[in-house]
Amino acid sequence: MKKIKLIIPVILLIVLFSGCSFIGNVFNYRDTTKEFCEALIHEDYNKCTSLMDLQGVNAQYVDTIQKSLKLVHQSLVQNFGTKLDYSFETAQKTFSTGSDGTAPGQTVFHMQISNATEFGEVQVIFNDKSQKIFNFNLLDVKQKIPNMTIFWLFGIIPLLILAFNIYVIVQVKRSNIKRKWLKYFAIILLNVPTIGYNAVGGIFFKLLSVQILFGLTFAYTGYLNSVWAFGVPLGSLFVLFMLKMGYYKTKDANSIKQD
View (cartoon, rainbow, N blue to C red):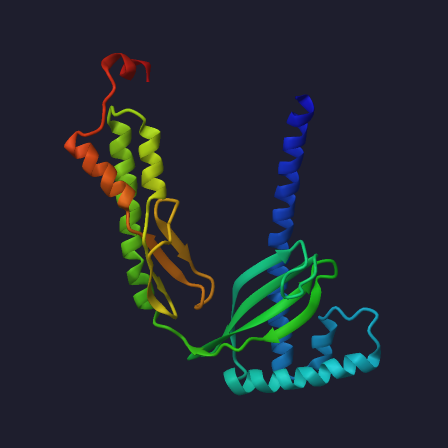
């Protein structure tokens, strides 16, 4: 038993330090990706290859890589110009070989690039050991920057759903009904179907998608991944109806005193 008590804190510390290390790497990868893109735009291919994980690679292969980077430069500049803004999107560390061939000990990093009117994406695979770029791809994404005013206005609805779920939880807590925990579960989990708004794709509807955690989802990581979503609060509506109509069994006076 004592060994188990010792093992649990050790595991928690390992997870904590791993998380801190990953977050630190993400900041470094963001800066490296931006630096790489700027060097690519200005045709500084020596700078680009210095940021890549090319240890042990012969000079001839480096020359081939630089020729490939020239093609990427042409595509980048033709599509987005030379003055770009950069925004972090996602980062995923791999612990086992992925379906796309990503090896363990690598991080797949996505960054949004944009000019005044359009945006795109780059995918960069980093070697976590060397902290350098293993692979760089300009993804086939080029879309107009969406109207974010509509996106933020839509967010009022999920926030109202959140407030309603919290309100019903408070009403349950203040009541003297039996098995309150079942009602809490219903409120938190029964938020279905899902209605949402994606900054690029607009409104969407998912019949069998359940929103847990009070029925609200929010993401703001690049235009493609910016989403508001809420689940119809069926659990809260049912619990509030039953509560107001007095259909739930209540505790007797002795039970209330014990609580």
